[in-house]
Image (cartoon, rainbow, N blue to C red; front, side):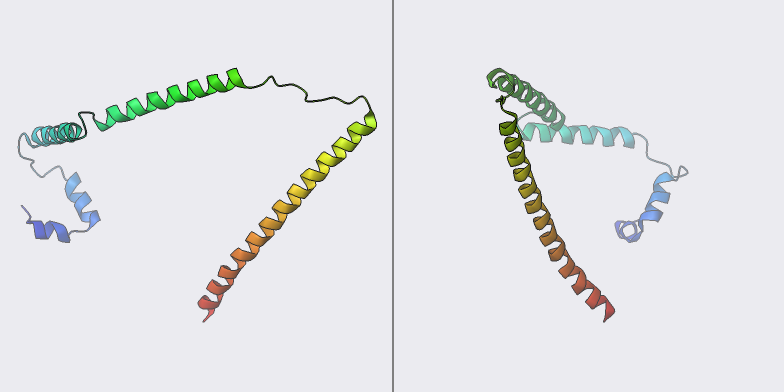
Length: 137
């Protein structure tokens, strides 16, 4: 049997080989006692956390989240106003003017987004230049 110092010096590959070696005799009942100790540790952790295991806490949290989601959707659908056209135009010139105004707002918003994206590209290019300069020296 190897000492603790010898085991600590082994690399991951060698530890894997030892773990998969079936010629090494495992003491009788070691698997059973190890499982019992792990179960006891889980129970002790559960008692320390108020008697609920981690699995139980996750289940309760999932059910609570689902209920909150269902109630939220129900309340939103109950109190939301009826969807429908906000207004219609009898005069086609007024409708056309409204469409032009809407497209103008959309265009300004898109231009603002493109400008922000250009600023982002500029701010990303500065670190790239610094890294390239440091790699070339």
